Figure 1 (cartoon, one colour):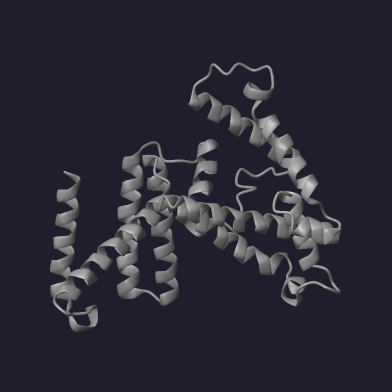
Figure 2 (figure 1 turned 90 degrees about the horizontal axis):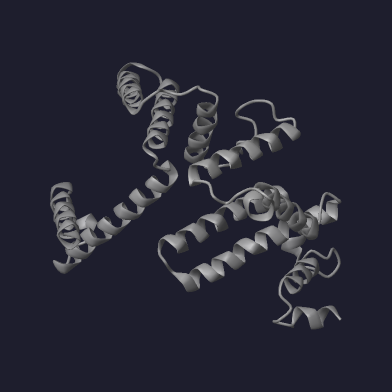
Length: 273
């Protein structure tokens, strides 16, 4: 009986699949779940992926367990809707990714040697992916870079793709020179140009900054997440120092908070040494 499966905590993925079927049942399911489609669920999928990354960054393993479950639910949700529309099923999705992993690791599941460097494995991986794109009729070098990626991450991936076909600055110095050029253009835009032109110049500067990260071997999305975390941590420490003197940021001013910020930085540097 379906209820037996739903209440069987040892039933694994089959239990979750049945729960989703019941939630989406047009007659007896949850009205909210029934109304959802791919477009309305996609933002939740993105959000859950970021919450997984956040739990990993905080090394909160119990939290990560829960967030991975939430992310798994997103896959189950999309596959349930895909099955209802006749596009695919959960099992076909599992079969597809399993086949892909086997095909992309011939040095593990085939007869290729495992005695190769990480660099060579990366080159082989990219060659296999290029062949897959060709099979999908993706002819352009930038085809297949998902539009829905966070903009900074997509800029990084677009530039990696372009670099593979030789469209790249030869060294980091050229990228830094371009950053200086774009920064100057942004200053000019601020003083002389329209808001639309300022918007464009700001985007150009961020795009080149992502390229600098690639040249330095730094993933810009991860670097910015780390910077956000550092800012959050330090500002919280500033608030704590203000609280020690019965103040809040609203009671303070920029000069005082800036001095406390410097003190927090000094404390952090001392703790590292």
